[in-house]
Image (cartoon, rainbow, N blue to C red; front, side, top):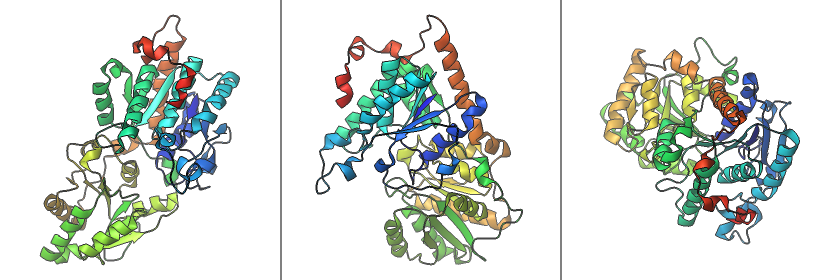
Length: 437
């Protein structure tokens, strides 16, 4: 299979890298040999050698010409908007479509696969599928054009046109959550049967030798609640949490004074520091820099509790770190809309501590119960069967089963499995000049 992915080592700073990387590592166990088509590293804002060693030596990785419009095509930090629609790496199409076509001619893959969150990856998949006639799997992960995102109206329209092209051509569309899949089944009912869910997961090998029978506490005499990863001011705003902790400090100091909120690599450090000062939580809130990946996992294993933050705007998404939290085997408190996918995943795992991210009063009640259950040694952890099912190897098995079925249907004479069967005559008449759209 030819896998089209912008998010791939040595890109640094995106959890989305791990989804593709572990599919690349695990799919050969289930009969699929990946070939990766990615972008030239010059297009990446930051690079790291950390994950390059995890790319199997037998997996060919082809890197096509690509530029970042903001860094490479701007004049005095300004550039025309059309250069960044649907994303800042649209120039990748100029290198990736010819390179992908050569790979198809030389290697004869059975299936194409492309992955969001860079829409350009799906446009490359779209054109290679049109040129080659090969079956194509579009891995969305999360929704593309949805309420409030992207904020820029022309970019939103570009996202919408891109996903309309995808559903006119792709044979399968894969999402990382049930909510996202349901959203798109409603939006594109003719394609509903071809929309599937393959969730994110954790890599068991990454936890090798990290487990300890009795891990040392992160801070002696304190209860450390760890949030590991980016805190988005719009979608993971911890202000209500800070307000709730301030309330507990005032009303139940004997309980709350032992609580420390640790934000590891939140990116928006100044934003959190401002909130910390506003609520007088200098002793209760830590803001710490990034760690190497395995060191970050080791910290999760030692935390007293793990924190998830997710706004109601993201109800059809589950933070990728949730699956690593499951494997860490620590109690989890999720501040998220009880009606969203993250809350649903918590309940399925047997984890009851859930409160809406923007409801300080409910957070105070939930946080109080969470802290007291940890003190009593009764805080629940995820069900073992849910943890084992979330392993990346199991997710690769699920994807391989979808690929097997697609390949078998495509191999049958006179089969008609593609979403392309539902497209209109207008889509069929597009010419290569449409590449500029």
